Length: 285
Image 1: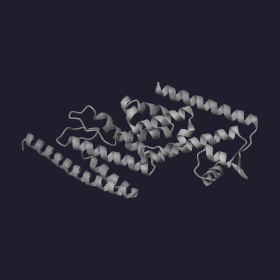
Image 2: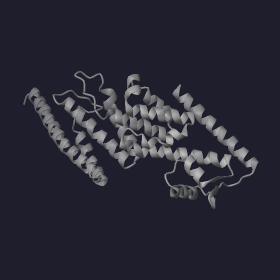
Image 3: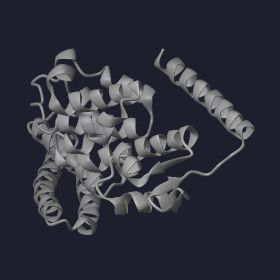
Image 4: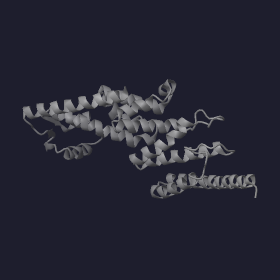
């Protein structure tokens, strides 16, 4: 058999395999969406494993980016599968899976911009990139937050509700405007942002609690509930118990430490924070 005939057969077989994988992945993606809509996230994990296996048979996907008649279709499908994986990881509050899937997905957002013909933009991109910025903010990865933010054009930063929301949160956090952050979950541009926003609220509450311990010997329950933005007295009581605060009547009594102990604690915290900020600034530069 002539070499060119063997080559033609080989390429024909690859094209057939890719077409079969394409159609199978489409069906699996639809199955994944149905499972996610029902909240069956355990089934989603099994379906995602199958989808990833089928994606390995699509030659147009990163890092190969092979050109073919179905290249754009393969890329759009691979991107949508990973977008669904990211959104599911948000819903199950698995930040490690979020980061893993987002790193794979980001290649579709960044490395396909100069393709000819171009891959049409995803309707989910800004929502997901905003979620990633919020995740970095919650994890206090400020240098990475700003690096990621710089990849977005100024008009997107100024006009996308998903991006503007996170930028405003970061500014409020840097300014110490905790009241704005405590109201963050009420102003989310999407329900998907609420779990991450609530984690940031928890961090801010901890900071307010630590400051209150230093500033006051005690607070009334009403005052504490107001400054920490708890919806109910029961939520405050549970938080106080977790923080090992003593409740006497209608007041929260903070643990009393000697002045020298407080000075030492504040000095060590100042040193730690200064070193942390210096490291973050060095990474940004």
